[in-house]
Image (cartoon, rainbow, N blue to C red; front, side, top):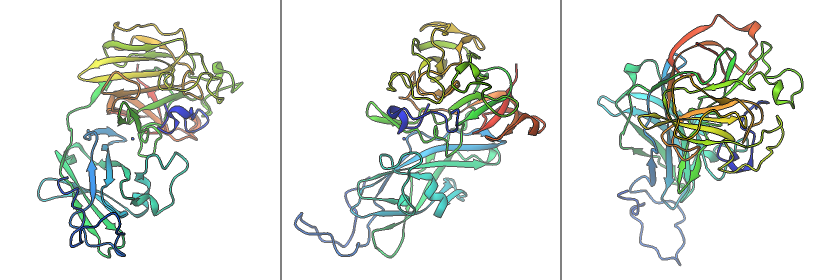
Length: 403
C-alpha cells in the first residue's frame, strides 16, 4: 500500500525498485475588541493561553521491536489563533509525579517528525524552519515514536509539553497537555503470513516509512490503517528480488508464494478479478479506493482486530466471505495487483473490516529469525541469525519465518 498522497495518484507502493477548548475563543489578552475594518496590531500581543488544539486520534499501544519497547501515535495540532505559531520543542513526559521525560523533539529532529497534510507530499516537503510553523487555522501532524528499554519503563499515562513562539511576541509560551492513556496490554500474537527465508520487511515499521505517514481521509475522518504495515518481498542470496526479466512477474522470488492466515478467524471481505501489473510499470487498472489493494482478503481475528492481505494473484483466492479459517490455512497466492510495483504481500492488522477506513494496530510474531537489515543485504554478508520472540520486524529487516 502507499501513503496518502499516493492513494489516487497510483504512486508505486514500494520505496525502492520493488518497489493522516475551553478558551479557544479567547486567544489573546490585553487587546481591544476589533472590527473587520481594523487591521491586526503591528506586533503580536501577549497571549492569554496557547492557541493550539492538540488531539491524539488513537491512544498508543506498547509493542516490542528491535529488542526495545515502543509507543507510536500522532498529535494533530490545529492553530486556532490569529498569528503564526512556531513550535520550538515537544517533550513527552510521564503523567505521574515525579514526572519523567521520555523523549524530546527539537530543532532538526522536530522538523522531521512534523508534517503539513495537503501542503507536503512524499519527496517534496517544506523547507526548515517552515515545517515547524503552523499558520492560523492550519493543521500540523506530529508523528511520535517513543522508544523505551523495557516494558517496566512504559507508563500508564503520558502528557506533552509544547514550547512555542506566537507571531513576533518575544517570549516563548508553554502548553501542558492533558494526559493520554497508554495501552500496556499484550498485543495480538500472530503467525507468519508467509513461509521460508529471506523475507524483507519493506516499508515496515519506522517513523519515516511511507506506511507510517499514510494518513487517508475517508467518510469524514482521517485514518492511518497502515501504521504498522509491511510490504513483504523475498530476496535471492544476492539481495535482489528477481532473476531474469524484471518485467516478468514470474521472475520474482516472492511470486506465487502461498499466503497463510495469521490467526483463526472469519473472512469478512474479499476482492478478486483485478488484473496484474507489469513490474515497475504503471498500474493496468485505475487506482481508486476500490482497487488500491488489488485482489485481497480481510479476516476478523477477534477482539476488534482484522487482518488484511493485499495484492494477490487473480483467481488464486481460496476463501470467500463467511468462511471460518484456521491459523496457517492458505488464503491465496502472492501477486502484483492493485497499487503495486512488483510482486509482494502487503499485510497489516487494524480495527475495522476495511482497507483504509480503520486504524492500524501493533502486533507480534511468536518468533522469527533475524537474518540482517538493509536494502544492500546479501546472504554472503549476513550475520548469525538472531532469534526474536514476541516482536514485530522493523523496516528493512530480513527474516526467516519459523515453520
